[in-house]
Image (cartoon, rainbow, N blue to C red):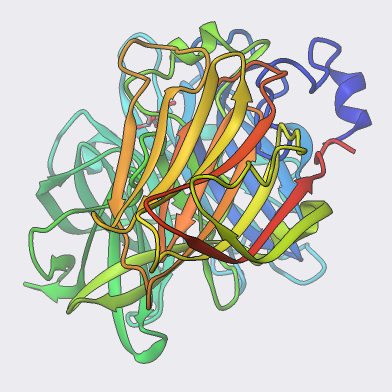
Length: 486
Ligand code: FRU
């Protein structure tokens, strides 16, 4: 984001306390869910629930818009969708109409365009209806279809449940038509041949969530073995199939088991990009739904941030199909100066090898042989009696992220420790971490912990400690991160 943005918004200077330097935030005001994530003409478009007038939310929402060619550096665009006579613009999705099935793109150069779906939330009544908008200029400006009138009205909801929102549209290869999953409320599916007229499919009152997402992925990279993932607001997922049951397309889960996306506290409303060739990329609102308001008492003039892009796959782990997550490789474009070490032997008597470094944001890659040690710990954002610690204990097999003393706390239950059992392979543990001005994302063996932290600006020390023997740090790379605000 850019000079242009700074000029357009004198309130924000992008160096405010806790302002993430390489994560999406609103210049000022409130941000919540990711919306309309779509890859088109070489750019990743990311929209978000936005309330420009305050750091604290209101029913009134807009779609804010940033885009990127990486996706590592994001450029701010003008607001994409604003409230109208039908109501406020709540969460939704976008797709590329590659074959002009809507007939809306007869006049674009390649006869394609973007179609977005959102929930119109009627102010006063709270009525929720699905509406559509389209763009013929790569997502910069949007026309509301029929002036914002609903394409799926409350009467078109066979479940007649007032909570009816957050449409996610996708192309369904098997039946050769568009599908929408919408929830709020219970999960409902609709189908369409032209993106405009929608017909009810499976209605699934047993599964309720906000912000659903639904996509098919190969298992263990095997294209002939595909499974559907149903995401409940980016917090939990279920695995199964998408089948015709009594003539209606329905999600049929393999079991009732719901797995967590993240072993940290701070992900919600995650969505994946539509139309990215060959991979599926997830981004989430970086907050726990228990304290999105409270974070606004700490950050200013903005409130709300988005995770880094995580590439997701399905893998068989101990005979269960699980979702694994890695940071997208393009994040390497944010690296600046590198500090690296090889074959470092550490005991509890070794002086801190990172004592000379002062970093408020960085990327850390570590490969540590733990066979001869009980515990290894990275201390981050150290200083002023503050520290955030990432440690691995070989005896318990637990990876821990401890933010009990990380800095300012939006809520009394914010300071906590988050753990996940991670198998060391031949005694070796590999960690990949991203630290920013108010967040930490730790990846290990396909799992991720996403945690907000609010350390003082000058708590920038780093440490590496070992307990219970000798650990061999086979490789350690620490990259200073560039800010994306060039
Ligand atoms: C989830 C949510 C959505 C809704 C949006 C409104 O955070 O409640 O269900 O569409 O926020 O901003």
